[in-house]
Length: 390
Image (cartoon, rainbow, N blue to C red):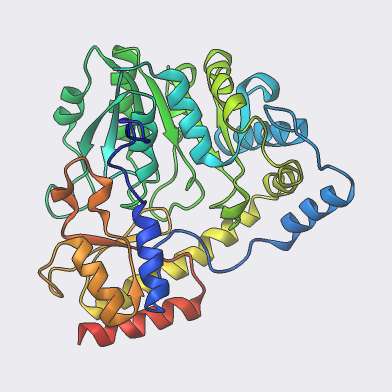
């Protein structure tokens, strides 16, 4: 029999998140692996979706998003970043940021095109690139202490990665899994390369409202970049509703038309009542974001201090809700074996990042913890890790 799986996706196997969750459940471990909250989102958002269901909003939505949500998103980007997006032609609502990314890459890349991205990367990126028949080319983010105080890349390595076959530069800031927020100088370099080589930048900004050091700058705000950038974000991270899968892509009309050409045949439309809930979320006063960030700053401190006491080398994140931590003082295994031992012996799950690299060797000496959890969950994990460290 011929193989059932296309060569483009052969070798990806089961997601690392699935494996770690299975092990965590098997050992009843505190799960700080997968990046979703163990608490619910705001009541006012849920009530808006419930009201939409009761009002009969149960049929297909407009393919590009219900008009009220597109309008709310347009107002949000104007308010937060002074970015002007026309609701009907430049904003596309998708079923989560992951679908927006797959639709964008699939629509923009021909077979053999190259996509430059930074490693470690969210694992969906490489799968989406390969599914499109494109070729990923990675530029490594080096851990703090190897090239400087924060996660950093070699500018010459980025320049060398761009070739005449490069079509897209994929950016994620704030960055999962490292917690890096790309600096103004780094964004300027990326923008200059995109303009010089006529590249499209696909910018994943789902953690835009979780920045602890500095501020989030959408690369589309830089001179010459709005017309060549697809900005992607979502409801899930900011409003603790990851299961709703409501995301969006903002881009000039030509790029939006490309995204929509793929999106219409992937999911066509996103769940209608959940879009109405998203309207309530997006229209919320900016004070929500201030409280949201303050609560996560406290969680970041709570877990980071606990990891330090347990013997980990904490790489304090500038953004996102993840902490990268070196484990050299606690074990000599690679990241995968250390996480397996951590689950078995400490009863705490984390994510091994080596699968987020083209060259897995670069990720073998640190692991990722998620702090999008209740205080009681973080405290239970910290207590177990301190016992493990002793």
